[in-house]
Image (cartoon, rainbow, N blue to C red; front, side, top):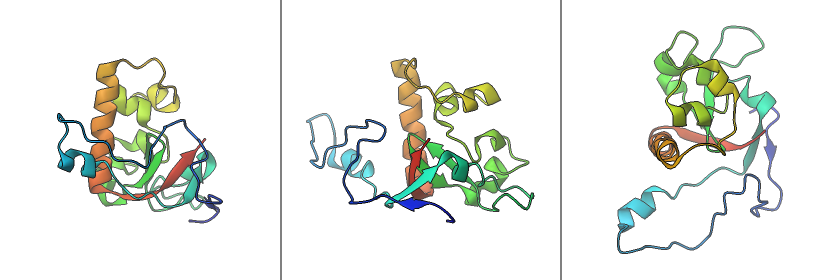
Length: 148
């Protein structure tokens, strides 16, 4: 992946404030299957905004043929769904970008894709975003962590 940098030391360096814990807590309301579904291995690779923007599936010689998008600080390879995320697809605006806000709002507007602030999203919008995250984790290869 070109210039993607490996994260040093393997520690959680706090990037993004996700507050992930290494312990698995299961409440009576959560099934073990639900908890296991949320566990994924994220490669120790950092993808910068500039790198992510190259992966749009475009035909320009400066663009990569593969298609990546970011959802909740995780970069996914969605090339297998190029009919959706490729240059001619309905979700082409998401390719090569952090699409978290647009996904949460269920918006295709470029201004929602370009705005990466999630702080004003309500519980329902965050739930929609979490649904998208689960979909991406179940369908696509994880490339690494996003660092704006």
